[in-house]
Length: 75
Image (cartoon, rainbow, N blue to C red; front, side, top):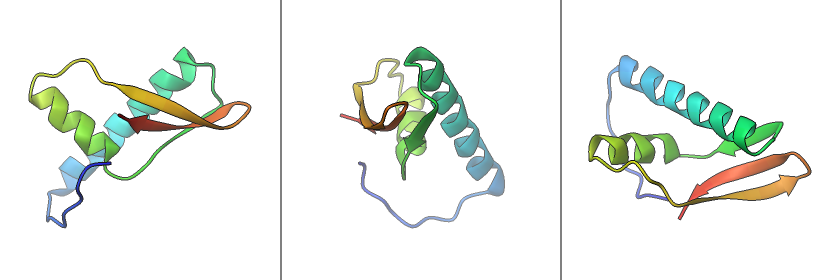
C-alpha cells in the first residue's frame, strides 16, 4: 500500500475516487466471477495517480478470502 498522508481535498475529488473504486470493483467482479471484492485504503487514489502519470498496466493480485470473495492488492 502507498504512503498515506492527511490532505484537504475538494468534495468532488472524493466523489471521483469513490467512482473509480466502484468501477474497478465492478470490472474485477465480472472478470474473475466474484460476488464481492474489497478495495482497501488508498488504492483508488494510487490507480488514479498512475493513470494521470500515463501508466495503463498495473500489477495486482486478488487475495481470496472466500469462495466468491477477494481483496484487490497492487504489487
